[in-house]
Length: 428
Image (tube, rainbow, N blue to C red):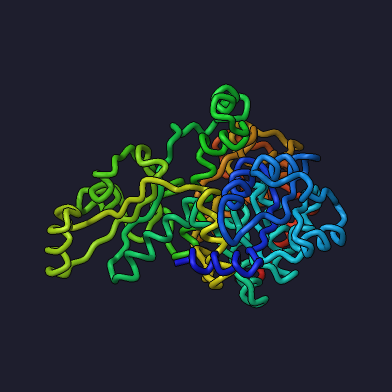
């Protein structure tokens, strides 16, 4: 139980001090959730939009006279030491101040990689809510964190972490996990752009780029890339199958074709339309006693069974993962072995020589999960290093972008960190 430990931190007057970079939908929810807890508070909130961090803190219930607005790391550090809250547009404060953990919640791959890198260098635990960065350089960041004696982890509130909890439950009991995955609640439209989803985004009070990254499949691809890399799984086919499926059909759909399912192999990641916002694993056992017990427990007739969690609470659930990292040095999910999957960039429309690739959920590219083996053999461009790249030859809509078809933006930290990761893996 975490509650007694959190209560003890509260009793000692030493709540877990959290620094957050990114005060959008995820960051705002996280701040508000922690303000209602015992033993944990957001002490630094950073957002590039002036005034946004202060707005988020006040909306969460923080008294204005407790908030120090500053972009000076020294002033910010002193304010935190005095028990005050800091609102800033300078992310450095989120690791230079005496916080216990830095949370990355911007959703921008380059920022996510740089923030995690800097926080680790400064001896802070890292809660990586930026799965796009993790899918690109998570292996390197985890190795760095291990060397620094700090935790680098994704959150149980997002699909990779929520799926990992089901996977760990099943695998640690000795069951063979055949498939693991998540639901997708938007019809797949690879051509979706911020303009085409603008009306829907407004109705849902969402950033249109974020919604476009959901609809075009990019978010699903990077989420399952991070999970696959953490457990050594691969996609069964490029982009996964993504069938329409109900919770009761998971154990008959995500199984080998030889047993009536859709899979050509086992140990794969998938997604299903109709089970969002849930996550699932499909497993099997051949032991007759266990088969009998699973049937008795109303898990179905077998020979495959599914565990299904019908929710994930995103930022609202993240404080639980933060507490595990700070209080127990526990990791929810991270890549500790060489990656097995890659999210690669695919042209969303015809691209001309000289065009620049915009961000994820934009107008130029979408993500597609591939095996690392196929991505390396095809010299495919990792999605996380695509933003800012310049196209060097015409590309057709739907064409997987190769490294020699672009000049990457050398000013981006994620480009250099990915290069370092490839060198560490012997992939350069």
